[in-house]
Image 1 (cartoon, rainbow, N blue to C red):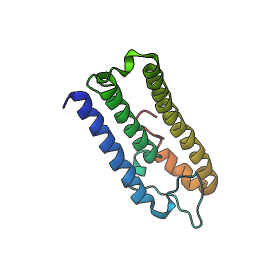
Image 2 (cartoon, helix red, strand yellow):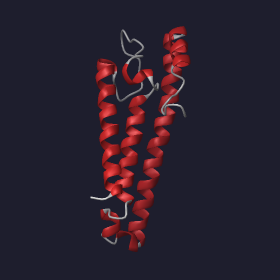
Image 3 (tube, rainbow, N blue to C red):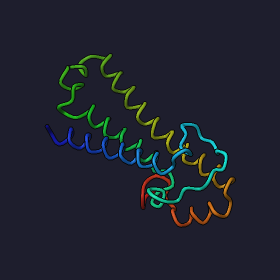
Length: 141
């Protein structure tokens, strides 16, 4: 065990627990597609009191943990010699780009969901957005 492995593991577990908590709080309102359900209500409790899109925060935390696992000095990628050839380096670059694209997609979807929820819930959403000004990262964004 090394610090990078432990850090990555902690991030993966923490992000997973956060996402599971979000699924539980949202209940039937959780979907993988951005949509408004029948009898939809604005969820403002649980992790939604801290940031407006905590499930995406959890996904980005998981992604960071996996990324740390993969690039750590004692990782399989480093130990296998994979980085000693062009194909291995290209694979690592592709994985890095995929991780960045996933995070970018989370930001995009958070903005899209905000627009949809603002349209659907009007003043109720505006009050909540004032109370919870952060999309994904508390006190930052």
